[in-house]
Length: 295
Length: 270
Image 1 (cartoon, chains in turn blue, green):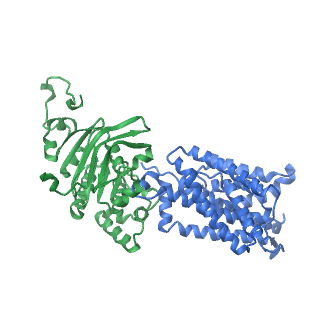
Image 2 (cartoon, rainbow over the protein chains, first blue to last red):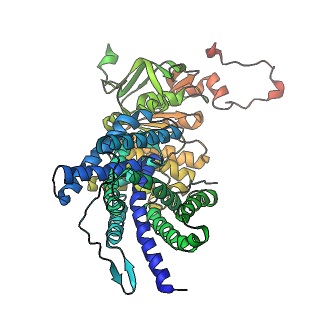
Image 3 (cartoon, each protein chain N blue to C red):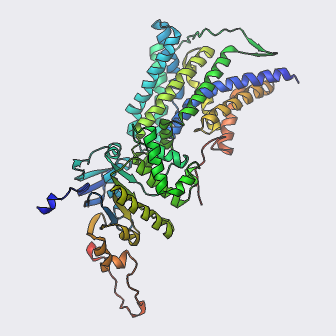
């Protein structure tokens, strides 16, 4: 057994996992306010990446300006989605809202395909491709940057949920009716959570776009992101981070063992197994909120 | 004419009809008046339309796909019939909804924070919290535990405290005594009375527990089948024999062996 190699697999797995977390944080934000897993998060991430490309390559803005500007645009888009589509569904069964987010995902994918076409475009962040050696272990710089962004967002949102606005968002997640009864605007709260999730989507879109190119495949991150969010407990930001690391390590190390046996492709199987087992064994995930039952 | 010279009621609801889902008529022409600074009770049995009446006033009907199809609701002389619930809270109407719906995953302290009106400064909020903790010392002790694990009485106190943070002029409570031990009901009603007297806050109380409610209010309305069937001072209602029979549990002790058996009906229903 080569321990260095195993450590390298684990560390790189953890870094990739944090990139899944980066994506999953967006899902958690929306789930926290509206108790719906947002199936359009993949679409939003892709749109975020395309907007950055449009601003930097097509409009010629420098990246340091294009990314914040894209974040602002996506923030507005998130609010717009609530205003145009979700507000009408307030009080409807959750499954209707779920279907709406699915429709939205298809719509976003179709729109990006129509505007920017299907060919993959590259996102150059200027991060060196030179491998970085930590002792004997080699890690990718862009993964390291992405993991840093994920952790920064994690800290930022942990702090945010302690502010008054953050507390109101958590209150909305707990009880719509009670929130309305004390004058909390549920509509604005849900809008804000979509807006913040859209900003997270820009971050995820930029990092993942740099790694795998910007094309329709970006929206497929939803599957891994959803697995991480479910494993973490859907409404826990800390859960999303921890679950991301776990999934990343299990996937990377597990695939290394299984791939020679099954002839490749075991990554997807591992992700699927994690998702299915989580739902079967621990439906509220690692850090998910329990519904409190008092006797 | 003399009555008009008196201060206008803080709330007046005139012949209000409420439709759910555009088909189900839940209340049929209810008129209720709350004089400024008064404590009023809405009594009646299950499903009589008491909660719907409160929701029509607070604007929470919309969340349940109900609407006011006829009549008007006036608050301090302003027509609020079509106003958004959030706006009504800003104007000073707060509704403590049925079932002690506290934010379970937040602490009591955060529950109070969540209800802070927009633009309330941090120091004003803290002063407000201290005032509420002074009314409900039990809450102060548990301010940082999870609200979902508070006892029923504490949750009810928290729900009332949370409503007070919005600085209401009219506080409406839906069945605050439900499922609570009698000594807790007494404690909570005592505090309500104190708030009413000390802050001049008008209170509209919905109760099935007519006995406890009539002890603290000045007037009561009796609602049955979506209509107001009786209205009077607390004294008058307490001494009414029908109210005694159906809502206060008997009045004088009766020896049922000696009673002729006839079915007593709620005559006002027919």
